Length: 136
Image 1 (tube, rainbow, N blue to C red):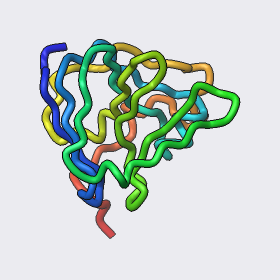
Image 2 (cartoon, rainbow, N blue to C red):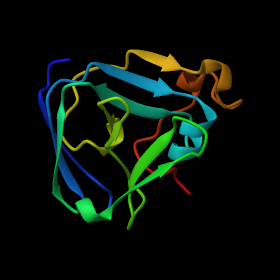
Image 3 (cartoon, rainbow, N blue to C red):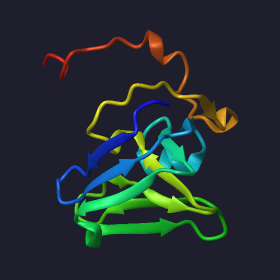
């Protein structure tokens, strides 16, 4: 993947970060943990074993929750709850794609844990698309 510098933030703007380096993988994960984390059909995470994460502001607002007995963890802003990057084992940087403010010129590599996907996550390309809120 080509972009080597990205910036990102949380929803409230208190946490700002920069990622320097290449992302090696981009996965959409449909496991029940990622669905709970995102409140949606899947998590969308970028992975890198070489990129560096630098907190520009708000590092003290970053909290990490690790689900006991699993490898699943989530970093988030303690003020607004937005998903944020985290260092995973071993030496793996995980960056939620939606946390990036800079353009991402890559497509996901794969959907993961499709056997666990939500029962309503089927043929979503046929659901109408609207430019904003639906008309009343």
